[in-house]
Amino acid sequence: MMKHSVVIVDDHTLLSQAIESMVNTFDKFKVLYTCKNGKELMGKFAESAKFIPDVVLMDINMPIMNGIETTEWITKNYPDVSVMGLSVEDEDSTILKMLQVGAIGYLLKDTEKTVLEKALVEIVENGFYHNKSVTNLLLKSISGKAKQEITFKERELTFMKLACTELTYKEVADKMCLSPKTIDGYRDVLFTKLNVKNRVGLVMYAIKNKIYTP
Amino acid sequence: MMKHSVVIVDDHTLLSQAIESMVNTFDKFKVLYTCKNGKELMGKFAESAKFIPDVVLMDINMPIMNGIETTEWITKNYPDVSVMGLSVEDEDSTILKMLQVGAIGYLLKDTEKTVLEKALVEIVENGFYHNKSVTNLLLKSISGKAKQEITFKERELTFMKLACTELTYKEVADKMCLSPKTIDGYRDVLFTKLNVKNRVGLVMYAIKNKIYTP
DNA sequence: ATTATTTTAGGGGAAAACCACCTTTTTTAG
DNA sequence: CTAAAAAAGGTGGTTTTCCCCTAAAATAAT
Image 1: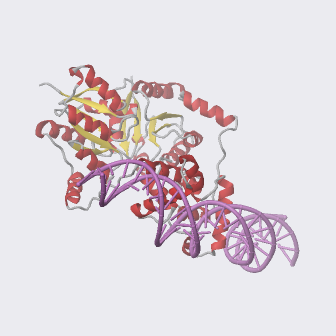
Image 2: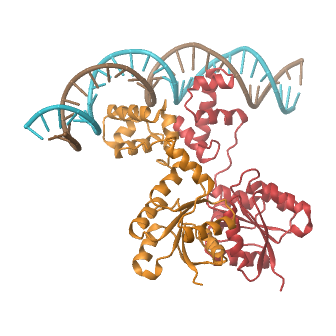
Image 3: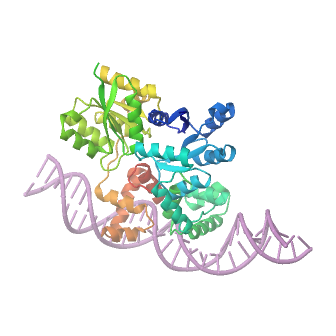
């Protein structure tokens, strides 16, 4: 029997190679190659049809081109390739986003070896894999409990980043070449929009949502 | 030839099992078992002498009992066991701390498979492994450039954590059953000690140093 | 061209945060 | 037992933040 081909995308070389070793112990699967980011994967795909696998195991947190963008690109241009998300974080919004852009399954990094194998088998045989947490998440999402996206204007993002520093609002206004009163306005809008009470709340929101990275 | 035994400690099951698969492909090494945290490892060591390996591959960021504490315990009680740190983060202070408590080497998670194998070989043959970044770090440390530890009292830590919330200092004082003026004092001491100008600076310090986790 | 809408800006006031300096109590160490 | 250090509390003041409300200017839509 022909083994199914797998490609692993993860910026941590050791991890991707370790997962490679593991996948290679599975009966029905073999690793074609590994990549450090989405860009590298795009290059491979373009290079030759031989480099297009059955399944991609995709880490979410990568520099250069992250898992979500890359997954979107794959499912759009190579709909026959199944993408499975792989991440240490189990934030609802991240998982949902992956599924929205076409990932066919999602695994947290602290799952058992056998679970990964079963997931891979299900993907190539049934075309999908959902573990319980994803199912629960989907249910939550459908029943409308998953919070809707909050979007920000460019200026608001700039302001938020500066609010995460030791600058006073007056100094922030200087940096942005605006009147302090305008900054006052941005702050008030964001406080309402994000439902926070003060600057610390704003800072926490920015960090939790990766608008500002400490 | 007898293979050297390796134990992997990492809270992410998939990763530890993946690394297990990889190590098992090395000629001279085989994995005895894997653990999810330091506590589990202590249990194993106590259970039977058969569970004491030649080398421990230790992740730093773990719940329950972290890599540093665990390493300290191992080197103190089982000096014949070599511990090698393994982490995604390359913060100077973390690596130094690992070496201080007796780790015999340190690898970032984005190293090549062959590097890991070479490191393991060096450890069992020469008794140590140092890659270039660790060497540089040691040089920096010796030349006194590595910043000295700042320590905190229990109260200060509690205060810092509460300062990272949307509570006002008055509310923080209530929570800690202290006068607002005492809180004022804590704040002033910390501002000076950490060289920050305002509450946002304090919050950032707490997050960067994992005193508060968002 | 005339509405909307968004962006920017401002006044005034209350609360919170910040800062410098001082006193008392409790702990710790010699 | 006592000197020193650390912790806790206090005065009084300045600056910053926060919040309500209004409005000109720029942009987009009809």
